[in-house]
Amino acid sequence: MDEVTLGRGTEWLAQAGLRPTRQRLSLAALLVGDGRDRHVTAESLHAAATQTGEPVSLATVYNTLRAFCDAGLINEISVDGSRSYFDTRLDDHPHFFWEEDSRLVDAPADGLEIRRLPKLPEGAELSRVDVVIRLKKA
Image (cartoon, rainbow, N blue to C red; front, top):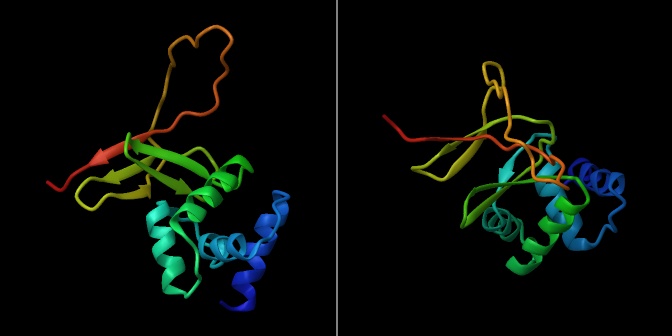
């Protein structure tokens, strides 16, 4: 990886106070090194790391993604009970999920209205609302 890509990954980890281990740096560079937002699964990130020659286990990828979530660097979007995507874009926005190829993409927020939420249980506070709009080809 080039210096710019690694530099972006290093800065990203530093803003959250995460120790820049070799694996974290490599995965951070893959996630944010080109400056674009992305949606990844642990499996797709593992495959990308493998393609770059970075020796990292799938378990390490899962643990690192969890650390990135806990540090507030990424959000986990659960599409169904068996698959989670990790989003580097942190603002509130909806997603389209293409069922045929299991692809999650940002959806335009204009036109989306959530007028009311149900009353929250006592002792709970709202963390966030995820909107995933499932699509299939017509």
